[in-house]
Length: 167
Image 1 (tube, rainbow, N blue to C red):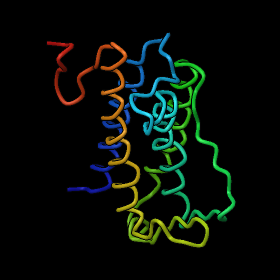
Image 2 (tube, rainbow, N blue to C red; image 1 turned 180 degrees about the horizontal axis):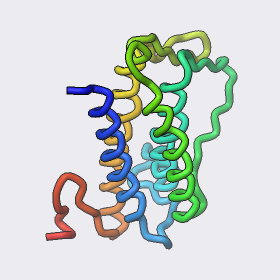
Image 3 (tube, one colour; image 1 turned 135 degrees about the vertical axis):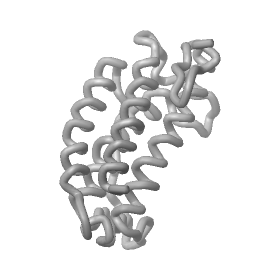
Image 4 (cartoon, rainbow, N blue to C red; image 1 turned 45 degrees about the horizontal axis):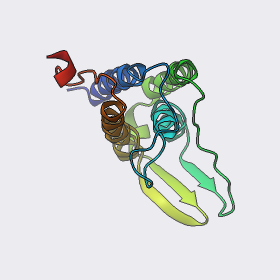
């Protein structure tokens, strides 16, 4: 088995499934909706899903370390509309996929580190970081989005087979 080809194929499949889920958000959805006070808003959650095919994926593939000082102010992306969300997702995917194709051989064994305020939060091989912090993390938050969709009365598309809305 060619692990590189398998990883690219998985990224392509999971990215397409994530886009399908984002596309299921109604155009008139309230992006400020939160199912619980500790939850992200719908807009923030949807915006976060662009991070995995975007900056998280791309930085993991093209850098060996991402470091921010303790006073760094990170502004999470929350789209103003579904159209803006899908446009950003498609743009970021088109930037990250070539970086994935270009990452081969020993590059996967190199260390990748995320440091915030002098503390390493992620310190592992590029391969493990890409699998866990990009792919698995995207799948996790996509699952959360299915709950949000259900709660706002939207149809949930099938991802690994038909959903209850498609039966």
